[in-house]
Length: 87
Image (cartoon, rainbow, N blue to C red; front, side):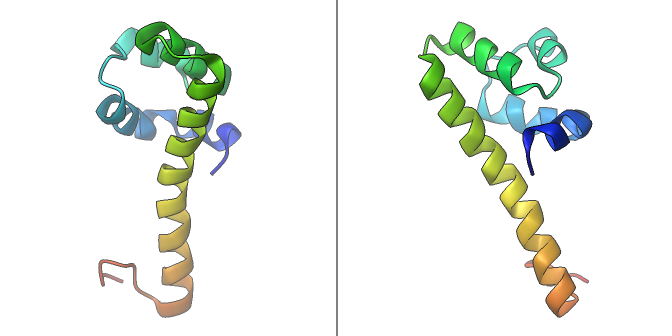
């Protein structure tokens, strides 16, 4: 998953963001709306970290979220099942 896709799936991803970064408010999440620059800016604001560190953390989160979906798609394509064993 990339940041363009994140904007389109933001409603589904907000829960994951809120779980990982509990200091974000609902208003913050509305403003961010899946935009990487806004995400990084709010992370800097709420957590007091440098821009480079915020970018790194944002990208790591996206990779962790997108990686799971990509892996499940790959498994289902090749085995007909996800890692949970469900078709």
